Length: 382
Ligand SMILES: [Zn+2]
Ligand SMILES: [Zn+2]
Image (tube, rainbow, N blue to C red; front, side, top):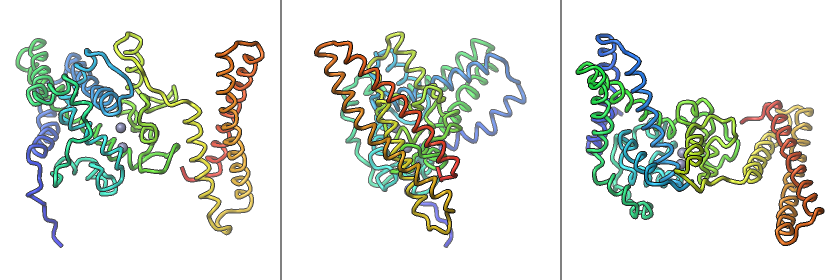
């Protein structure tokens, strides 16, 4: 059957803009570079606008407005709404509504960027074609009470064009006259919009396709440090879907997550507060449960495919993990009791017990890590 474009469903505004900026990035931008070259100012302007608009999406639209993982004072909210608009990914109200539906209905028909409909649908197809009927904005009543969000909604187009294209052109003009203005418009404007847009789109497409699932296989979301490198840390998407109210996506201190570091710095200078973190043991328990699930999957494979030695290894790992899980739960209860006791009446003995519990927790953590390594070495699927 010949391919027929569903022309009635094409979202002409979105499609013309998205394709327009991508085509200009591949034609007008290289032509400008060939004709005028590039100087340090234009590079810095591109990087500044790339970071400001990219972080406004990940820190502002995503972690602040969609998931409320911290509270922010008005300067942070204003900045992220201004530069978030300049990313040309819709007003915050619509963006957040789509994203909350994504989390609630992931991998199903009601997920706006449902990966089961294919890579291109999740990446860009869902923006190029209209949904029928248009879903109602019935999951953002909290944001409707936010005056700044509603102002951004009202003046979205002038703000987006003003901050996204006019401002870099103006700065370029101040630096080097008309060629500078054209450079600012094309590099920190057009090329930067394309880069930030596809960076965000990759979170919906590649982050549901490549990488590992260390926390859960309940949905298609995956953790990938490569994706984290160019998505301001959003590449740890498996963790994010499992614990969406944590302000971090890369939960380990060493995981590349510039968004979480920016939130942390903003907290230090008192512009944000109330950072939400999932307790460490909850994260570890989830990893533990997922590791056991993967182990059991391996053990379920017919005897002929697994040699006896590997089978034995996996079985002993599973037993160890089960025991660790039980010990952990018991320890948590007694730790909570003792912490309560400490509050009521401090005694040296209670203090000692709490210290013992802490040491045991650290030990279990080490053992779990060893079991995880053992599993990796046994070649179980990630
Ligand atoms: Zn999210
Ligand atoms: Zn997702």
